[in-house]
Amino acid sequence: MNNTGPAAEVRAAAAALVAAFADGRLDDYFAAFAADATFLFHTTPQRVTSVEEYRRLWQSWEAEDGLRILGCSSTRPLVQVLGDTAVFSHHVETQVATRAGEQTLRERETIVFSRRGTNHWLAVHEHLSAAAED
Image (tube, rainbow, N blue to C red; front, top):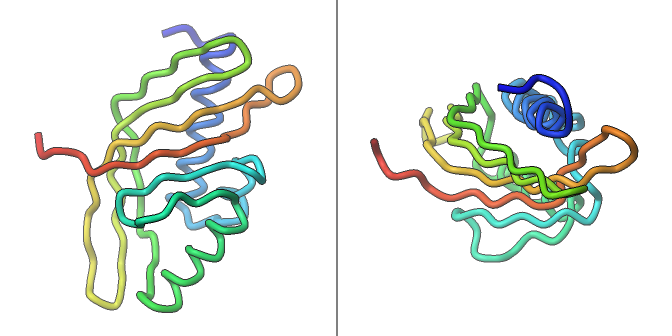
């Protein structure tokens, strides 16, 4: 695995995004996305069309369901660099707690990154789907 260049930069940006999510550092997590990023979640019927809209949705999950992230891990990463755009896909396992109890979610995720500046990559789209059991 090459530890330099654009693919390594994207892996680092994705790792920082996942770590912020796993640690519940929501300001850092949301800061990993462009303001106009879009999101497709298998758990919501609508496309989310901005970070601000996603923040409001997240706040509703916290208020209505008591959502808390207990942990998150990423496996099977793949980075495809296409000029100033990169596609990062992986499997993600997230432990959550809600008023209904604790649960482990197994999902697949694709995050599209855009290069902003020399080696700064910002997420511009996230697509999350349920993973089939192995």
